[in-house]
Amino acid sequence: MIGGDVRAKAKGNDSGKDSLDFVGDHVAVNFLNTRRMLDGVPTDTLQSDEDVIGWMRKMDMRPPLVRKPLRPETLLRAARTLRALALRAVEQIKGGKHVQLEGLNIFLADAISYLQLGGRGRPLELQRVYLGRNARQYLAPVAEAIADLLANGDIDLVRHCEGKNCILWFYDRTKAHRRRWCTAEECGTRARVAAFRARRAAAAK
Ligand SMILES: [Zn+2]
Image (cartoon, rainbow, N blue to C red; front, side, top):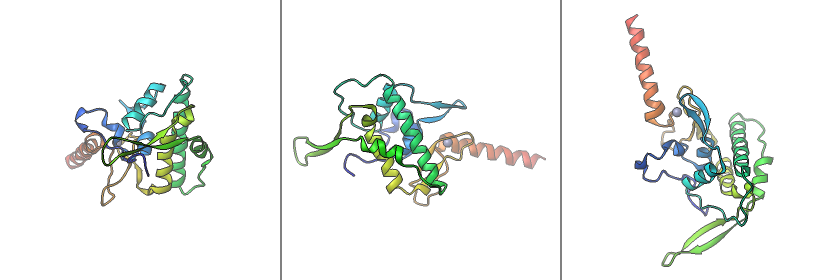
């Protein structure tokens, strides 16, 4: 796949720049995780067109070329639609059900992109440039990452965090495939503390 590593690593995690954005360990899974629990409330972190653009930038996606500004809110609506389609497809595949692909294929069909050479020295850079003449087309890099996950990924390794009330997903790339948590600090620690308390309570009886 030309156009970047779909794993989209967190850049220099030290900034603390909302590392939950990257726990999915695959752009498509990170996209599902734009819905998450914040202070115990299911929250959509995509609330505006700018949120969508900002998220794509965070994932290292080069902004698609836009000639005319997109109509307000269309990008947000399309992103939420795409996310719902992706989530449904993941759940259908995991559940062994018939997978509805029409909606995702509409997004894919809208994509227009080409390769462009850049840079000065050796090696030259090869980058994929996307056009974003409408909201669906703008989201083509995201739709293609989703397609990559569904077609090339091992969907058994796409799992929910086991944290109580946590709705985050991750692509388990650990060697033994025993990853259980979005992050060890968030849900892992909380679960260990809860288990410790339960053991202590049981012992005190
Ligand atoms: Zn979690």
